[in-house]
Image (cartoon, rainbow, N blue to C red; front, side):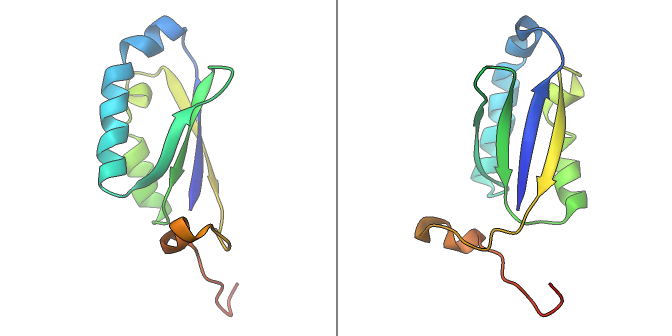
Length: 101
């Protein structure tokens, strides 16, 4: 899985001008199952996206279409991790260790 930290690089007025488009983009990827959760950071200097397990190339392609990135009001930091333990509601997202791990 991935944790995507979104860092605003422009004034909030510029971010807010794109908020509706960004929200629609998030909804699309949550509805399709790409994203497990998303939300604002506190203080409001960016956001967080939890993305399901997929190839890094696939994730990068999705993230490149974020209106915040397209319009250069934010940058993204991607942290990959193995979700070895989850609550029961997230069991479908758990990774499993293989002998190569």
